[in-house]
Length: 107
Length: 116
Figure (cartoon, rainbow over the protein chains, first blue to last red):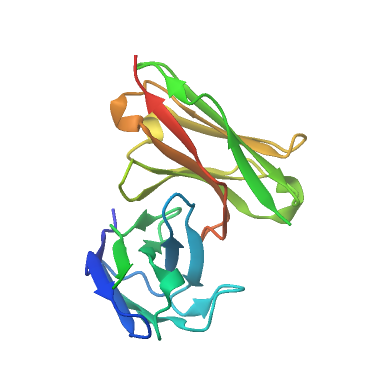
């Protein structure tokens, strides 16, 4: 099984600050890496697919990068509505596996 | 607008079979070409993919759950279903249905509690 490890687990950030979340895979997954946002009591929402492709309707402040084993989700200029838990997900092996999540709190 | 809606019992007894259905509206399971998945989330925890199915009947399962899971599709009702047998308290979770891989559209989720 491919293990995805996110860091940090938790981040407290001031509005307008830049947020960087990393996701490391236990083996190469090319660019089969996706990012989701989950707000409390809501289902996850797809933000970024295949490492760097923005999903339809997602604000441009969300950016993804990386390939192989190391990936990054960047939120430029954090807004209050971005308070959520963010998950990475790999799909190189069928439905794949998820990272443990990174909770972003607004200071 | 495409919507996915999970339905099924919210309480299942240990050792019994958990059965859930996802009804898709605004899209045709049979004509879309997508894969249709079940994903679960243990309370306060992360996400776990369970299985997916294509309208053609092609299926794939999470190896850790494969021995207990069956996913099926009914294109006439535009639904797909999950059966998880021999449940224990460890199967208590919010169960989501989702479209395609990556999961670009999710249902609202349904909490299933395993308890006697």
